[in-house]
Image (cartoon, rainbow, N blue to C red; front, side, top):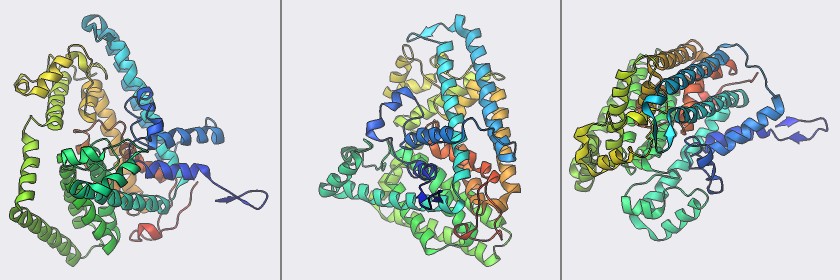
Length: 475
């Protein structure tokens, strides 16, 4: 709140919108705004998109075309923007060069396909710009408050969906009433697939959000000021909920989070040998108990067998699509290593580089035939980034990530526990980027943009001060 000239209080709408943007990151877009998906293809799948539009409009109204300060956070944003400008210019040039050779698929040519991806790039840069504005508007304390609420809501929704799965009846009615506003994973889908997805479009989506956002956040609290009962209980409940998503993506990301967490905890200077040994011992005991429990429970044992089968069996829809996409993108990259084929043009080579060994499954045959009349995109984010933008794009992206890591490490006193959050989350995000498109997942851009907060957050009085009790200011 801030005082106006009349002595009354004036609501800071921009801060409210920023908090709502963060809060609704894991939820599907509101049903009345579902039409935006067809207008802003790829980026309008989450409820946060609505608050992104409102937040950007408020920014323009209040600030106009304000110059981005050349501080380190601002320079990082400029690097990100320049990256997409350069690689999209190269993509358009590649589209022009290849247009005569490749023709059209489904009435769509190379230039049109590339321009569509370039528009998405503009949207991504706009998201990153707004993420930077969030760090200007909100203190660490306020962001922590929002993330804690997100975790609590996810826990409630998760157990509600588990109740739908196990008991149906009144729980299905309650959930469907809530879901009216979102049109997400329905109660019938929960029961028929025996998987939960909270208020998202599919189980892998919420499992990915847990893996790149919530688990790193809770682990960072553990490292920063010790294992509290609140952190421990939330971790256990989220792991329990994620199990019912039966998502290999979620399980993989959780393992990555645990590994990075353990490494950071071991090298943390102010943690005692007893604390380090205790953390390792606790995780070792938890691992033994999980293995023992799974071994003793036939139902869980069968479910885990299905999970491991998904990792290696191309009959599984999501796994097969990811594997096919990775192979196609890799082969395209080998043909156009320096410039890439131009993002959006991968579909012209989809059938040529389609792994013939995969054609033994019905899904693979369907997608192979689809590719004759429909232009397929690159799919997962980092693989399509590599094939679309080549070594030029890779160098830009690697430099961007390295600059972010160096900035947040050098200014770690400004970030408190968010320093550990970023290090865990960025590793998990890189892994996630090889199994998801990422584009419409706003947690991706929050994590990528976190080092930009160095422009606005003040240094904590002590490095070991808990995140939620620090003093902050905004410039």
